[in-house]
Image (tube, chains in turn cyan, yellow):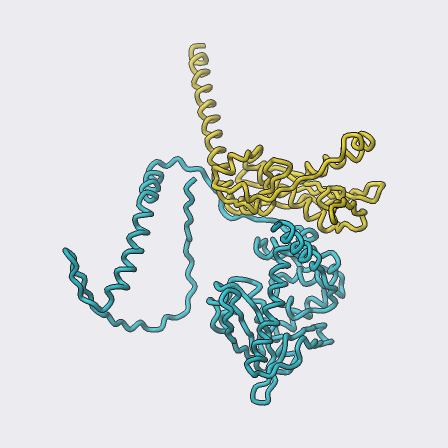
Length: 305
Length: 201
């Protein structure tokens, strides 16, 4: 019985997959890290691969969440106007469709709604966090918002982020950044030049994340360049260390869990229990603000075969 | 003479040691590669486990496998309007390089057959998205390339169980065969359909 229901839903989601004609530089695509990808959208959109069914589920969920956020805003007494209004900047062939504007102190503020995983939701607290995101599609929100601010002649906009798991919403203020906006316009000009001259930008450095899901990967045919090389080691010393590491791992985990529990229970207390005496003291430290720096480290992963 | 006589067994020992090392290495690689995959990376196709390109790409990342396309994909159109894509790719692992082809045809039941309310519907070639067929030919080449360069052929269900994969959760793909009489009436179709399913590798 459940198979029939699941099959029907899958068939429905499958039928929702579509590729929309693309005749302009859409705000939502201008932040993509691959220029060639955008030019393909403009010139060969009809050859784009349909989104995978799993991705279509995400799109559908995104649309539902967007409507839910707009309803919530209205229920909370916030005036929502100009839902799904389209804008165009002919000179640069840039178009955009904002989710809505909200009226605050007689000002109409552009609003873009994004639903996301709890992990992504918790990692973003400011517009800077979005700019620095390791995920290219999250970084793309910066460009999208800047384009909306340009198209709507606004100095400030709001990004509403919704945690798909908890339902919580947070708002991120985005100010128009003229320097950044200039770079978007230059990008649009470069794309338009390629389209005019029937040329394609160079491929980007092969990137599994960007190229692996690109709807034009069957046309672009990107290479995959692997870093490093794996080796089969016969080092007995390393093997002995790994065996001992594997043996100790569950004990360390248990130790850490117990240590945390004891700490929580005994914080601020002085307790004697049978032949143990638990005591402690509060320690105050002033940590000066650290300058931002990039650090590089190797994250190891060990799998027992 | 004596020297030559003595060196022969030494050479044999060296070779047999090398073979043993190679066999052991391949066992380790197989075990490690399978551990990187999960139930979603496999399909049960007519009772046999087949790795999907999602799994092949995970394995490629961990084993530092590179690839590139050799020339452009080739499209061959059949008289009935159906078509197939042939993709040639090169796979590199350390100093080893292999060339592999990936082929998918629009006649493959995956693309051409649908079932509606229990009735089988054969889609005409014009209804089949050529991009999907090309993408599948590339996926086919990637899976072939990764599995061949690592020597991961002939994977059995037991291998997957040993790698901790719950084989009951692997998606089943079964192509319903036509009655024997009909098959005999259409030998060409039978051959092409078999070729198509084999290409799902």
